[in-house]
Length: 194
Ligand SMILES: *[C@@H]1O[C@H](CO)[C@@H](O)[C@H](O)[C@H]1NC(C)=O
Ligand SMILES: *[C@@H]1O[C@H](CO)[C@@H](O)[C@H](O)[C@H]1NC(C)=O
Ligand SMILES: *[C@@H]1O[C@H](CO)[C@@H](O)[C@H](O)[C@H]1NC(C)=O
Ligand SMILES: *[C@@H]1O[C@H](CO)[C@@H](O)[C@H](O)[C@H]1NC(C)=O
Image 1 (cartoon, helix red, strand yellow):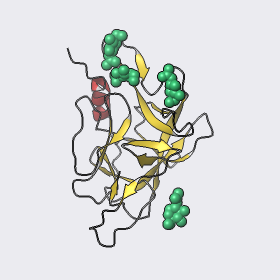
Image 2 (cartoon, protein in one colour):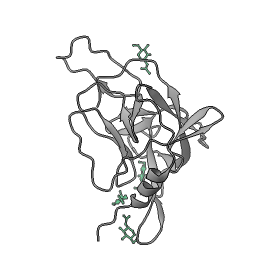
Image 3 (cartoon, rainbow, N blue to C red):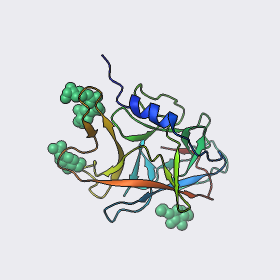
Image 4 (cartoon, rainbow, N blue to C red):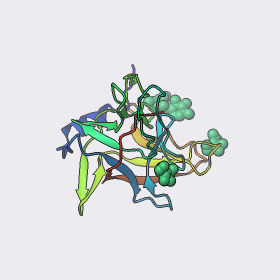
């Protein structure tokens, strides 16, 4: 039997009374409630989201007046979170079957089976807006070559054993719980994130 570790989360997220954001409202996602000195916005880099690595955006040579954008921003469409990218087809944010917060590369809509794509629900506390309070977000320093770089992982429940796993943790690296707060972004959209 093939297990879909996020099936129960999917049902929960879909059942939640999502507070909808306008698709025109771009925002950054910022580290909050970390029991660590980590703070600031998440940066898209190499298919996942980081603090301690810069935003990796790209302007193809054949796009006239393409603006270099070094901030990672997002928009919402229905229950989906997308990168604020101009590239045709867009770039979607999802949670991989391994539990890592991930985005589709330019010119590809491929998302593996077992991924969680229904991410956009919000909890508003004291005027702040937190991404999907039904999910448990972690930052883990998963890149041995960059000890100060941390990427975003989510816990999932093993459908067979009920064990709660954070696959960003390998038993000897560090992980810290976070929440992600949306803050309005007024800058330019990137052409694409690489
Ligand atoms: C982003 O780009 C602006 C304008 O080129 C520059 O002033 C700023 O230092 C850059 N920020 C980062 C984090 O690279
Ligand atoms: C969790 O990580 C380990 C080691 O990288 C990997 O072997 C395993 O397949 C991962 N589990 C899932 C559910 O992706
Ligand atoms: C766990 O991850 C850290 C950071 O990437 C790495 O330095 C360490 O060697 C890894 N340990 C194991 C047991 O895989
Ligand atoms: C769930 O746990 C079982 C038993 O430890 C393991 O064999 C299986 O790979 C796990 N499944 C996932 C999706 O992590």
